[in-house]
Length: 437
Image (cartoon, rainbow, N blue to C red; front, top):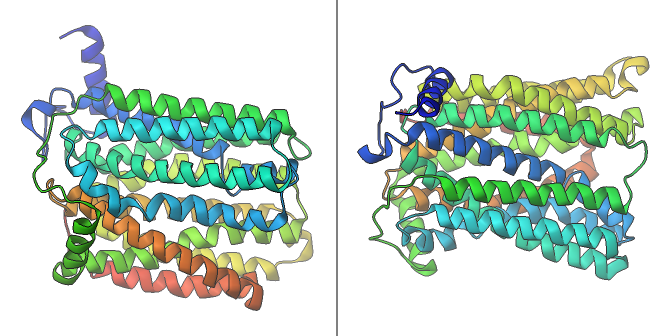
């Protein structure tokens, strides 16, 4: 074994806390020798993906893009629903297609490459787009980017299930989250350099770097050593829908998991409203948003490895504890409105709550990702992930519209209390899930 391979194996063992890098569960024997190398390729791919996600954020960068090119204000409200649901809703329809591929990494590569192309097109629109037509083109490109993101999402989990052993997947996702947190810090530092909204050239540079991030993601995926898997049982879209509905009727644990996952969306739905409260109370412009991005990165660095280790022990308990944490954070965010004006009229109390909620949300994501990968057998993993994501995408659209209406009617503070109740229900539901580790 070459010195570089020995060093790689030792670093892999240190990161995973194991003494034998050839310990394998639930992956082919021939994948064991490639596991350390694949681990780091997954890690670097996650870095490129997260950096690109931050620099093309539908909550931060794309609204500025629409403002710079003079698009109608109502288009801003479509950015987050398109970005999130567009990546989740179609996944059931591509599960059968992916199932028919002996090496699923090439689907991942295609998704990364398409996202890179979409980010490059957004960079071009930052320079040359204008008015309603420019805004419409941004939304159209975002649809394509979101669909490609969904393609990569399902393939990434399936490839992980084939190349990374059980009891190490949560650790991988934990370290991926930590690396992603560092990328978020870098993105926040860049954005804080601008006192005002960034101009066309600055936005084009940010989006160009996002394109490079996704290109790097695709390159790392292409280099993963994946053992060809079984292709029997692949279904077309309609067959996938029928099988998915059958699973929901017959697999009570899978249905229970999806109920818990839906309720855990409270953490994701609360994040933008905590940030909104900070903006409303402090009057902070881009500097305040940069602070939120940086505390988000710091929180990710702290949270993800801890959650990852716990998820390998019991992803069910991670989901339960994250639900309880989300409820506490929502109530803290609501309580900030009653702080003395000298405190509440700054961004810092909201930044603290935001950081805590990011830590909790990392637990939600790691818990439910590890749970579904470990729950599903290798022959049905792609279908389980796709069906769960499709259901979540539809619910996100519906809940997004409902939450937006409630925020307009009740106000942000009351909405956070309602989301706290939803998070408590998620914790109660997750506590009754069976163990899968």
